[in-house]
Each structure stands twice: as structure tokens, then as C-alpha cells.
Image (cartoon, rainbow, N blue to C red; front, side, top):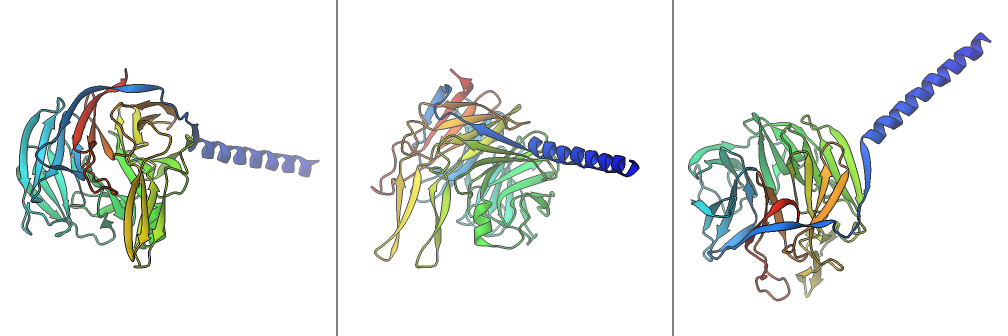
Length: 378
């Protein structure tokens, strides 16, 4: 009888342990079934067209409050940073000089960042972070001496959090947290080798909140619309598996070519994301379908529309649970055009980058625009 009681007690403890593990795992995962049709529309506040040049593909950002910085290059490839307030009025500009000295940059700038005090540029040539004041005065140049990560060739964002920084995309690591001298303190993906397949799987867009949590949209997972949340120590605390019927269409896959190169074919699961208050906003359903083919001994690029979509949209999630709240579109969000979404204190700003139609070779009419909208639907 005593042995039977002991066994029953043991099995009860085991059951409680297994239930606790299941509950713990359930707390870390959420499945969102999202209706394709939007629940409403973001109210357009203002629209401006950039006339003096072309908006760079990814070199633009906001301070989260009331300033937007946009890199514009003219026909001679001279680069200038234009500063706008939340009314999209031009409040300043400064030139980005080419060179190898402090405050100068090479021909390739992988990314940038901005806060209330500084504007940050990544210089690929010196492998450094070049810092400017919010008015455009050069402040500092910090070389990145940590060889454990490399910066992405583009779409790389620098975000300051207290005395540290987040940088992403990086290889490996996806998003790396660093100290003030850009030495790595942690990373969201554990890989340390530069494996192409793993690098592709870990392609992300990221953003942070006021507490230092990191949110990423996975770009390299086939057939997935997946969002992950990491705490400031870069431990994953939540994953949202989302399904809106577009998961297969809006996902990327590696295509390899006879010259040894590879490209990402397909549509992006998202192009950008940001946090406002306790909500996460994800821009989806834009940038078209990328199709690269091997024709006549070389790669041919085609930009295709996203079938079945009339407008792109913003998905809104709770930051705590990653539960989907609603989907809002906007009248200007054309599915074939690439946009980036940034927050202001009381509105959103969307930047339509400079794009050439890959089939006609002419610039798209939707290129080089900046829009502001209300934070919610009309």
C-alpha cells in the first residue's frame, strides 16, 4: 500500500510538471488568424514629393518624436540628408561627404539610425559608425573592431538604448546588442558561422520599444509570417505565428545562378515595423514580388505586382502578447511600391523609396514621396 501511494504521488508530481511545461510553452506562442480584408483605413494627413533628387532605398529614419531624416542623391550621386518636421516641412539639410576621414563615407552606406540627439551612419569603407548631431554637425567616428559580426550590405539599422546599441541586420546574429564602442554583448540568433542557408533563414527587420525589448519580423522563412519578441538580454520571450492567406505568396526563397551568385525571389513578409505605446505596427503587402531569372547568360530582374491586393496595409499587434488587434490599409500604399514606416509622436510617416520599374527601366510614379497619417483609422 505504501509503495502504491508513493507511485501515485510520483505520477501526480510528473503530471503537474508536464502541465507546467506545456503551460509555459503555450505562454510563449500565439497563433493569429488574420482576415485579408482590412478593418479600416489610416487617415492621410499630408503628402510631399521630393523633386531635387531620389530618396535612397533604405537610408531614412525618424527620431520617434517629430523629426525625419532622409538621404537624397542627385544625378551626380551627391548625397544630402534632408531633415523634416512632423508637418513634413524642410527644417534643415547637410551634405554627406565622400572620403576616408572622420565624418566622411565611402560609396556604400549600409544603414543609419536616429534619436533625439544623434544621427548615425554606417560607413562600410572604414567599418565605422559616423555620428552627427541632429542638426548635421559631425560629432564622432567610432571604428567597429569586434570581428564577431559583420554588417549587412543594406537595411542595417542602428538604435541606441541607454548606454548600449542594437544593430541589425548583421551576419551572423541577425540583431546584435553592443556596448558604446560597438563590441557585441549578445545576439538574437546563436549561429557563429557565415553559413548562407542559416544567414538567409535569419533575415529580419527589427525594432525596439522603450524598455529595450526587440521585435523582429522573419524574412527568410518560407511560407511564414512570423514575429518574435526578445527581452533586453536577447532571450526570446514570445513568438506569433500569423496566417492571413498570403504566407506562401509573401515569402522569400534562395535562387542560385550559374555564375555562383544567389538572389532572394518572392515577396517580403514585411518591409518595416515600429512600436508606439503598447502596440506593434507591421507594414505588409508592399514592395511587389521579386523575380530574378537567368536569361542569355546573365540575371534578368522583374518586379511583379502582388496578385489579389489592392492596397498594402499595417497590421497592429499588442506588444505584450503579440495578439493581432486589427489591420488598416492606406489609400497611397500601392502593393508594387516599396515603403518604410516610421513613428512620430502623434502620427506615422511613410517613405516611398526611389524605384525603377525593372521591366520598363523608368522610374515609378509612386517613387520619392513622403506621407503622414493618423495613428489609427478614419
